[in-house]
Image (cartoon, rainbow, N blue to C red; front, side, top):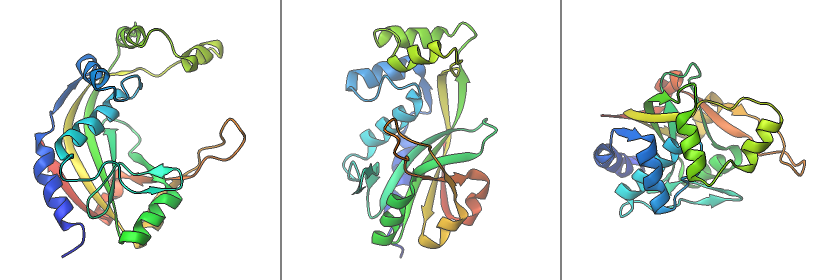
Length: 215
């Protein structure tokens, strides 16, 4: 029996309790009440994390192990990260976590887990009504938004709702890492390079041990 077998059993059963439909305004207000990353543009990814923590708080450790400046989302028998992905996106890649941290996680337990929520999403209207509502809730535009406007850069349309279609549980081992691609992140404001991250192509999931939770 693999070390992660019990983790998989729990996840496949308990994650079925997740709500399928996430309304943007209601979800952000719920996150705000819990003081949990409610200001974030990608609110739906943080809402997914928040609901998983609610469901699994008595069965997994939150957060998981930390390596240097990287802390994984949760830990059972192995470390797990949570990611949310829009399934209608042309880009099938999912950004995972810090390369060195994931390598160390696998060295210590033999495996590393990814919990990837695949969602149908809807976007803001041309008048960006949802974005304006969220900005007002935050007390006005952020420093980042103001700097972007000064550069005359166009912001992305915000997601206004998400419907959870399925969750893919991916198990990675040392031999799998060469199948992942690497994303370079440029440099921080102090000129120091940002750590590289692994990326997984969802079209390649058959190459890894994986389990599906369908809703």
